[in-house]
Image (cartoon, rainbow over all chains, first blue to last red; front, side, top):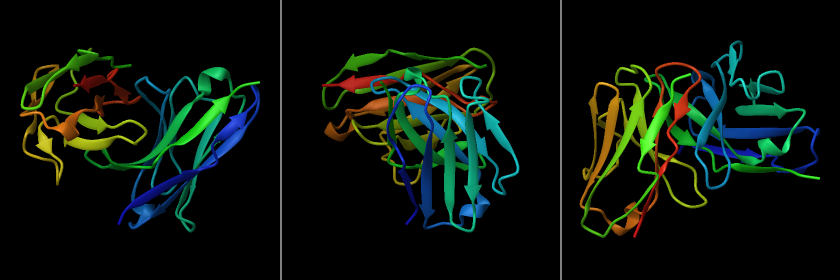
Length: 118
Length: 106
């Protein structure tokens, strides 16, 4: 059974940093591009970043480019999102998701809530 | 960036109703349009990909169609378990973008 389990969410002060993890199981993690998507509660979904199956290629949304870093450890079947210089506007639920080559997300993690507040 | 305009933002319906949700892309996206269902406190789940292909395990009352840059999700015979929020998603080009969501309420 495919599973994506996020961890690392929590409360952080403005200007602070946080790293989210997404532990994958039930599939060959190293075969898939992985993505991060976030959602302010009650609002729509926003794509944030992606990383290639081998970890060598990354892409970011303008809103997080230069502040967030996506990476992966294929030996540990884990995806990461390092978030720096966090602002209140980064408060959201963060999802990791597996992309199928046709271009759709077939599995999502359960979400990790990040609250940026003083 | 490609803008996805989803409408309506919310609707009220009854069990058994036929429901239609529309997503319009700001430019051509071919058939690179996906639909997800999201229930409160849960992650989205895939319903339809490539505009009209039903994901395995999704009931056949869900269907998707395309007319140029306008995409439609139809639920034929709304069931209790279908009350949720629906999101469209374009995967034609980066950054990927989503519609604003449609909340289907009783």
